[in-house]
Amino acid sequence: MGSTKTLVKKVKKGDGEAFIVLVKQYEDVLYRTASKLLNNDEDVADAMQEAIISAYENVHTLKNNDYFNTWLCKILINKCNSLLNRKQNIVSMNDHIIPDKRNDEFQKVELEEALNSLNEAYRVALILYYIVGLNVREISEFLKEPEGTIKSRLSRAKIQLRKNYYNNEGVIACE
Image 1 (tube, one colour):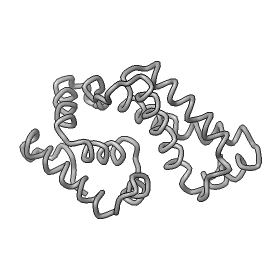
Image 2 (cartoon, rainbow, N blue to C red):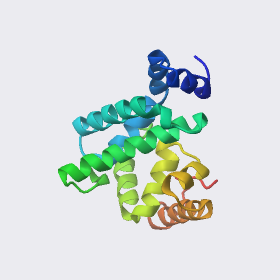
Image 3 (cartoon, one colour):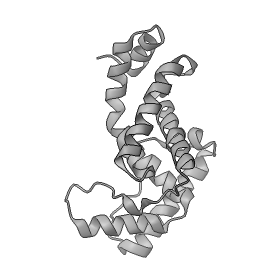
């Protein structure tokens, strides 16, 4: 299969199969990200398709091959925002639930409510960190904010969730 860096080099030389391999590696992350930002599966599919096409057409603009995942997620988020602006919808997490392996509907609803109680900056930081899987440095670059600000938002969001919803039960682990 090869490393991301190697695959991106092949894609930049015109290898379409390498691009397919790269996208398949990140398909689940892309879907989860888009589904948290958009209101229905059709919009998610449209945004993912637009992001993948745009990434393929513009892969030559990627400066650091190691950041393909971050770059692709940024394109997807921009496509989601563009789609929302076209439809004049407001991003609402009320229609979305973070997957819960225990399949306990009450906890899903409670977590969804807890996330919706956070201000947007905290919610976006948590989504990018826990759902998209970006690290603090990548989130910092993506949002064009200092790493300390991102760490602070993550920490404060977890404290706020623990205090207001989970009574220090350790639902979201501090790192």
